[in-house]
Image (cartoon, rainbow, N blue to C red):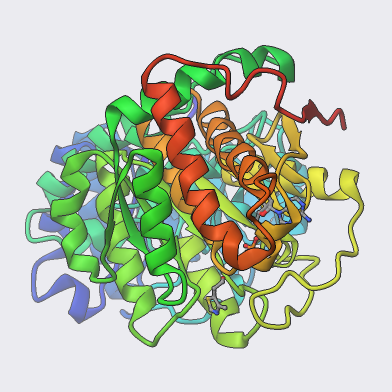
Length: 517
Ligand SMILES: Nc1ncnc2c1ncn2[C@@H]1O[C@H](COP(=O)(O)OP(=O)(O)OP(=O)(O)O)[C@@H](O)[C@H]1O
Ligand SMILES: Cc1ncsc1CCO
């Protein structure tokens, strides 16, 4: 009979986690809350004591008809007749355990790489414990921290097998839905999550387990906004752009900017010009109030400080919980070690609806083909158009979001479609903050048009870049200096026209095509 792996509890006997309580009582409470498998893990007690505890636990799990698995100790499992074992990479080999245990015993294997997972599947493991998902306070060894991206790669590599899968490491109430959502590969997802301290150390393990059951049953709120109608032709997508610009102007969305101090004033003016309502607030705790306005959050790490990341994480958590859009602009991501670390922390710390950056930044977020950035500039491009389109698509597919790779041609992808936008003007490259403002504008459109994130961002870019073309064509614009005020005027002009239902600003102007990869 297949095991229900959905809420897999792993015990921990360390005093700091158990806090003087009786493990059996904690586990019983968790079972009342809906735990579906229990793994007894004890790196602490002698064999005799372990057998005694395991026997008591087994009496409890049997009452709930839930399997009890023993970590590492095949002898303990045999001594008490447990339903199975869980083996780490340094424990007894699978085939040895198989020989010793009864035929129908459940054997699970830990895997943190594709090779380990494939070997465990070939051996005949019943399920894999995939991790470590996130570094935790108790496990700071980050060597095996694989995140949702690594988990997804493993799931993809074993997609044709029927093996069960659970993710383990640092999973709690605030990240469990995202873990399940973002780890999903095209053909295989997680069957469950393994939880340690979020249940064992909880004041009320039953309530904690109940909350997990509820969260696991439902998709995250941000996933509900992403069911885009799959219109595949760029032309068909464009039909809706003027309507969405009008909608954004009418909605007058709030855009909460955690943005660098270089461009703050310019970006606030851009947001006002298009008809949105900007607030610049770097203080993470304010997000719990600000997210209630159902606008969006922009995290732009252009002038990162030692306090930025913790503020970003707080704000992102508030917006993610409410399901309101979050945009990430990893400015200068590949410029310094500190920024590279910040990228890793932010990517592990929450969900971004849109990641927007120049080539150097997006390559850093992708990870495996990063190149050193010199400051905030992208640096000389080494990728051709198809390679940029592929990078944008692959990152969006991996993160299950939208990616915008900016440059003279912008590449926008939802992981399936890639749209190339050739609008804009070289003056944009000569004014600081013009890339940053695209992050803010995208946030405004994502907040106003929730049903198709790709189309929302596309509409924002087109409004922005057509306004730039209009501004640059004015005879009084002689360079980047005179371009800026004209640009704000032209954004305002499009916003005013859109509010009146006048779409003429858009007719025949979009230079957009779908990149077929
Ligand atoms: N040569 C160009 N021709 C047309 N449009 C351009 C050109 N250079 C830049 N742009 C426009 O400007 C936008 C931002 O460009 P870029 O990729 O340089 O941003 P960025 O590096 O993030 O900028 P910043 O950090 O200064 O805000 C692009 O999306 C594009 O629309
Ligand atoms: C110049 C600069 N330095 C940090 S942020 C920023 C603005 C453009 O991204």
